[in-house]
Image (tube, rainbow, N blue to C red):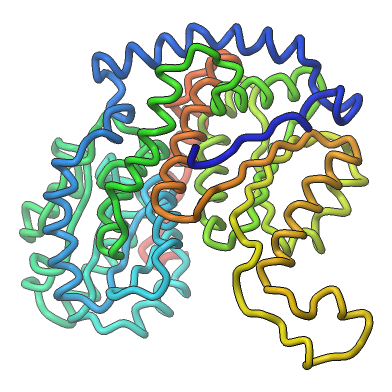
Length: 431
């Protein structure tokens, strides 16, 4: 396995009254059978394209030519988008380290952030990738129109055709109309792949390829998890099924209305934000769902753990560990002779990280908090692809158990309508 999924400390016989009974868990796993059959059907007939992306390689060859051109011509690439249009790519980019070109994910419409970024970039050596599934997302189009003016001021309208790539679904949407007017390239966003489930599509793969990452390995990791689920004869031992049953069961039976994702790997910090959107937007409907929270080790041992251990017992925890023992700088024993520092001397930095992540999981369990542990065999493209597929499947299965549609987001449309009305009501002075 690319990762292990240890769930024993989620049950009442291990952590006490706040854990889930095994009988309830087994009953909930049995309830997932229709969801598993639906997933198998969707995969077989390709009616949910998300499930066919892991096996596809033809599109990656086409995207690699686009990425190679970006690497050749640009020092920086600005990626415009919000939510599912950016968080997946940002999560993958966190694996890349110091790359050329540098990628910048502009997600908000904060004028200060926009000016700070554009003031330090050379417009003539900057590519723009604008991602909007609908082709009309207000925030993304505002970002893009401002970037268009910035590029045009530096290189004229030719710069727009030469330095911009758009990703949008087919149709007569505003983004494609701008492409028709200014001549920049548009790549097709599959209308059947929702934004928060789009990381394995070109939305995530193009930024990954520009950053020099192995996009095929991302999909291979995702494919391994998917294949295991589709072939499983023992759903209780299948990690996405078990995770969904635990999350729903702990919420229903034990009031665990918050789901804390707690990675001890800095490179997974954006991934935890990606998970937060996936879980919240897919399940938070009809008064149902649990609230996803991100905690980061080791910092949140010193800022959140007191609450987690001694505050309300209303949370399920997922601690994600990596292979850290024996890695990193070796602490020179000759640097200090204070007995208080003796446990650190002669150890690697990664030894302390390993001790901290294990101690946090064990302390949570000892205090009666349900906690599962996911341990990666490596932190790379394959493992991140596996984690992403795990949580997409876990989310879809949890939605089945809750009786909600994981692929829509009706409530957020109200805010979009109201924001557009406020914009229309403003006078020409912007007051």
